[in-house]
Length: 293
Image (cartoon, rainbow, N blue to C red):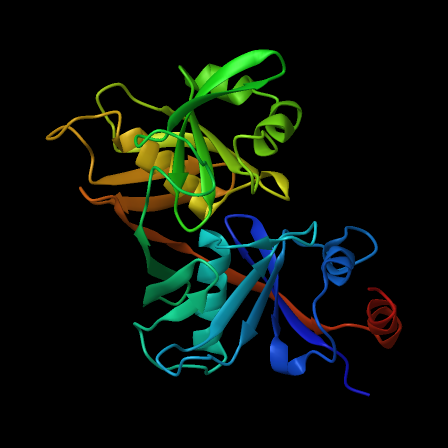
């Protein structure tokens, strides 16, 4: 009996299971996603990438992204790169530049090497339905562990709450598992939010920042492409032209990403992604998934 095939990929330590919808005998419900992503009892991952034949033939594939708590994410920069490079390796396309459809809209990658690609993420916005009533500049304040945190809301297909910290020492000392949940679930963000804390590494060198990420539905992660993007956009807006950097290197726990931010907040994200292993679920585990709602 053939059981469900999958591949596990990672990008800067942000790992996803990739499955093709055509190979699934059932729907990916929140309960099944939680079981797949669970440590010790499942395959373990930061989420699931579900690839389907495109509903619009102008695209190579439709991509849906699920968090390990079973919720659906609109977009993931790291997950998108993993899916993009998987599609190329698995023969869905032989083109270097193409498009795929996500819940957040269409993204357009360009493959630049065996394990690297540049992704046109579209235009970031400082106001969105994910921060209703927020000002046009996206700035606000949220409280966690009894402390107020000034932030800037950035929407890049999904909601980002970017918080500037005063020094690298302060950033590294933050207890994200203690601070993050209250910000993620603050009532100002009806769909919850991702949170990134960032700081400039060298005075007078605005093109380099360090960031740490608390991801919605995940917790603290080694990296996040959209989290890095939110931090980079917020960081560039601290500078007026001509000092505003056009490109920001974001150093994360899992490595570094390059974020280009245009004057109109159009964003391109460059980084790598690599396969870890491929496999099949056991008959016993697939039966457990069948029995899970």
